[in-house]
Length: 139
Image (cartoon, rainbow, N blue to C red; front, side, top):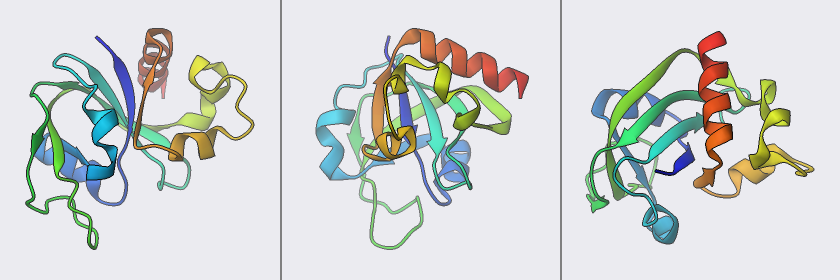
């Protein structure tokens, strides 16, 4: 099982909670194709004032394509999709700045926020996944 940080902007976090579907643009096909059933995705909203995690989800479907625009926003459909099951929905978003310095994922990064925004998703070490879930429980 792999743990991922996935980016979800605008109204997408609300839509993910409601519909339990997450999607990415076609240009990210190589990355999302590495996700498997049972993997976990910690969803991050970088546009909440500061990048913040809002929940942990388990992947419960194979990757599928759907062109129906459900995520809002102008122009982008995010057709490469996964069905998700909520594992932990945070009562309050967890600002990543509060724990970023303790994560292997960002070790040695001069600008972890820029690194986070470089890609729509990235695999993270299990230890970071555990730390983030624990930190969210304390927030």
